[in-house]
Image (tube, rainbow, N blue to C red; front, side, top):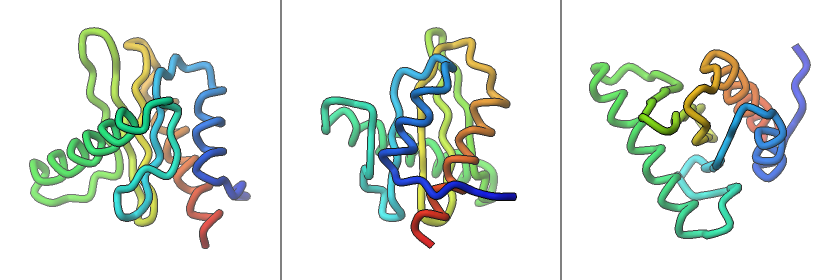
Amino acid sequence: MTTTARTPEEAVLFLGELGTGIRATVVLDREGRVAASSCQDERRAGRMGDLALELLERAERSADGEVLGSIEVSTRTATVFAARRPRWSVAIVAERMALSSLVLFDLHRVLVDLEGATA
């Protein structure tokens, strides 16, 4: 399978163009720092990144330390998707009716592309 190397900024743009009702996107590096975001406010992007990492970590702790790779949490008004690989994490907030299988596929595709950009 051929991958397209993608920078964090390109990943944010790509996800924003999918038309899946994405409201906000954040890409985090290995250390959990914001590498790129669709948020205009840096504090908001940082908070979103912190919450995404906390969500992934709490889910893994509740799964007896199993590395989950991705998670989806729905609220009354939106759905949060987060996924990670060794070098990168990505999280989005989408409209409530986003098709989760497609969103998670796109997140994992972006992560593979980010890994290719830094290999």
